[in-house]
Image (cartoon, rainbow, N blue to C red; front, side):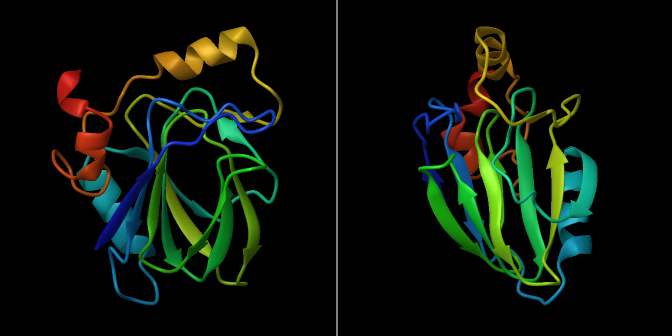
Length: 167
């Protein structure tokens, strides 16, 4: 499994999260349809609100929640980090963990593209499509860090990169 961490600066109207990196996990599962596997994995590490769908084709972010996106099937190109962010080509078994405030948008996807998403306990997606107010920026900064990595539990890159042991 390959991993990567990237901090995105503010991008046009999208605030991103300039203190917590996006985590990219590549090839967690090697299969054509990993939706059930991602749902079980995220649930086993305490992440909630499991859903299966695509990703919106417009730029948006969540002010009140961190989000994990596991590609269960199909392929897609997601723009992460706002209008001037980075394009990620995603395949089944790939996974992104987006800290609150991180912009994301589906640019292109196969007809069978499906992701499995989830959130840390007590957090829920609030879809934001405009520049944040001062209050929303405070909300992003105050979103509680999760107690576990949705992929590796109490260890792994997210645990280290987000300083989860410092809670």
